[in-house]
View 1 (cartoon, rainbow, N blue to C red):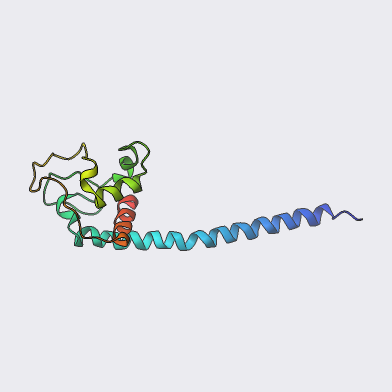
View 2: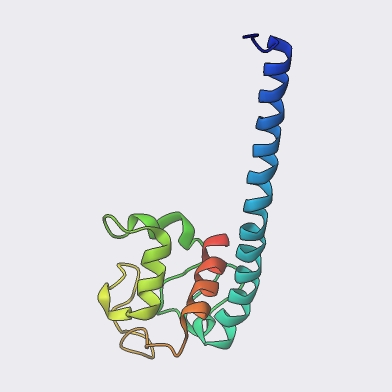
Length: 135
């Protein structure tokens, strides 16, 4: 039995490493493109669904001062509730606004007593969350 040449073995390992790296990069690329597209869609939805009427967003100003600013939500949303990621926190805040009262809210001193339940589907929520976290 002959042993493979060390040069061949290391060259083979290098080729396998390069191939795995390229595959990994190509696999992630559609995900990154989807995230960017979701964020772009989310920016439009943030305005169209009325979020920007009450919340300052990464690229918007609100009409009312009663809602918490979401301009830098990616910096604090993951710390707001124990064991909850920023994505999960923002998603819950959209789906079930009464689940947790933000310490930054003015406790109903604005035009509403709290955040309304929005008419948004799962994909729209995903897009809005992507937009806010990209912010």
